[in-house]
Length: 201
Image (cartoon, rainbow, N blue to C red; front, top):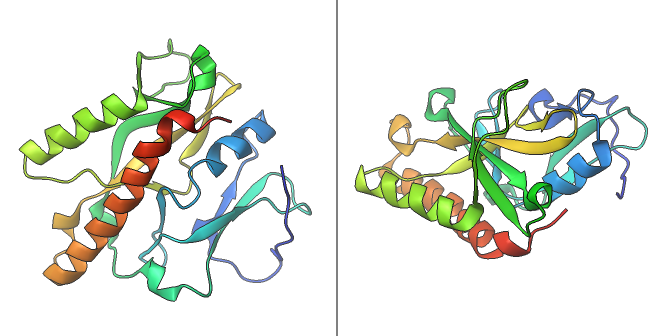
């Protein structure tokens, strides 16, 4: 896994510095989270911002940290005014298919430590079903990541716990701004959907 230099002695947005100390298999977790780089947006509550264009870096001079580094040349890819009440847990997790000797990604319900592994589904049909169900209820499924969403099951299996953005909970934004945010996240999600079967760590 490639490491890059990041000066953590300078003041950082701590929502963008993820502590991976509790992850046992660091290399596998790093390869897995990199699959979602720029495919899932990252939210920082402290700045009320959603980052759509960023790099995931693993500084070589620290022990087990990941830094989400927004592209400084693409400021228009940072979405502002995202209030915390619009960010909700989904109870859904993405797993690497390799755990079941399958290619691509898997989707499952919330994983609880010490409990048996829950039933999994291939990512694409599961996601299509969720999107369809949300659309029927007049809502959009807009998955994002926040600090702490990269986790490990049974001290061996990395997974991502998904959060989602609920556009209806952003009343301070104009309808144009809300529509733009929804289109941006949906575009990323469609890319992830199309590539899901070929994403392997």
